Length: 376
Image: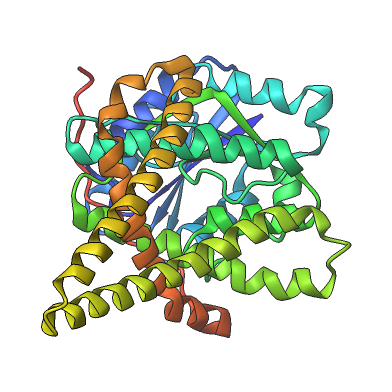
């Protein structure tokens, strides 16, 4: 049996549509939907009560105070009737055949050691510039990075929090989700990796999700992701250094994470140094040096842009057999955001991540701005 767990905190805008879809459109005979209402103060509880009266497959656990997504998941894990647990966000719609494909992976001979299978994310709300650019981004992340991580060393930096199926006993073996961390999907992926359990990326299992459509919501989301990445780095680097051979399979993603964090600080420090140097040259009337510095930096950025476009193009060709190639036009916008904003979020959230590792973290959450997306 499969339990679809849907965490919800103030999701009145999208929760009814998602639940009706999950309860009526999935092509799988044996599953339940378990909603974890984490202290909602809007109309979410009333909507859930009405839906429960209509669908016997729907169960609801009410948590009186908002204590975070990870806390809700841990409670739901012990109430779940299924041996397999699908985490599904309140705005996420998996394809009708998703459960069938998930179980085909788990029940295959190679699937005996699969701890979790994460699906292929597809952006649902593509009407805005932000939505289109994130279509490129997720194709790039999923199409290249997750494929390469699982292919090289059977590791994965992060599961998709919006739609991932876990084997329940392996989830419990890892101690469940860390409740004080900013990103439960990143931390559980690392915890299971250290147990030498196998993650699986399934590009043929597709789910549709809404993405932030304003810079404010997007920046807030990326700050949370950046903090979560730094937290797993601070937690697991000493562990890996203490037993480098025992955990040798983790070195590939540890190096990748380390270089990403170091690069973020290096990028902004050198950018600050470059800007101050150019201002100094201009102040002293040395405009030739200013022009030379600008030209050299433009050459360097052009090389970076070319390399980034090649990666994005390869990802768009691979993902869903090239169905997203038309979004290549929006790749420069995505690359600009990645190079400028993502490093900034790593730098600015670093102190908060250190505070969390020191024992002062909390897992409460605030749902992003939701709005209904038309099917057309």
